[in-house]
Image 1 (cartoon, rainbow, N blue to C red):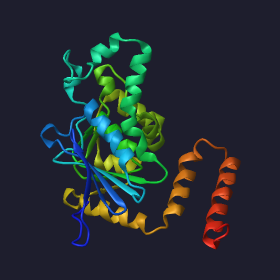
Image 2 (image 1 turned 120 degrees about the horizontal axis):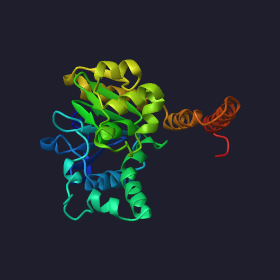
Image 3 (image 1 turned 30 degrees about the vertical axis):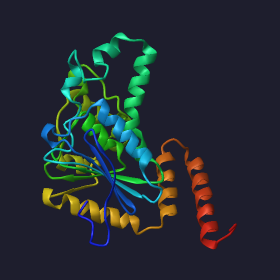
Image 4 (image 1 turned 45 degrees about the vertical axis):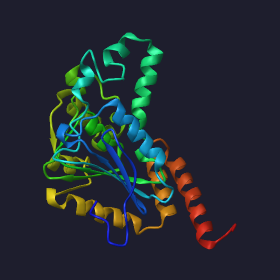
Length: 269
């Protein structure tokens, strides 16, 4: 996002382990703050991302996710794959030697950092420049919308390392680009560049790198122009559409519209 006006001051709610959360009225910004390592991710970073979701004030309607430096996020820090792992953390090798229950619980905790971005009460926007690889790709996929710089490059490298994408990225990837293309992207680990991302629906908008912050700001402003409850209800309808039959979706639309009409008419107040 662009710098706040003289009339507003950013409120920093969190700033540690490579993550900073700031709030400016209805817009929160989550920034990955380790550009020297291309915003590589770690379990500590994931815990702070999870905490950021819990700390959002109720006034927030838009959450912007961005990365400092030349890359959005180059994915999981390779230190995770060493026998030592991260200081104070169980290494991945240690986790593999543990029980199925313990391994499942640990991965579930990691996934929590990627799940809250699609909450119905907010609209999340990933501002992506440079590399978004592996966990970085999945973090961008966790958001509702993606605005990309022309140099953006996505890649799902987990299968190339003998792993699978396990941070919530497979479902949104398939819903955005379709099963066949999602499989090809994951199985080959190739780069999806910005133009292809926009053409296939992975990116909502692609702009020159110097215009990325401005484009995100304009998109956020356009969303904020609509009444909050209408956006919340519409998002819930769209998110649930794939899991409903046509008749069930029409019933959900009627129910949501009834709530909106009663609210606009002041019925029940």
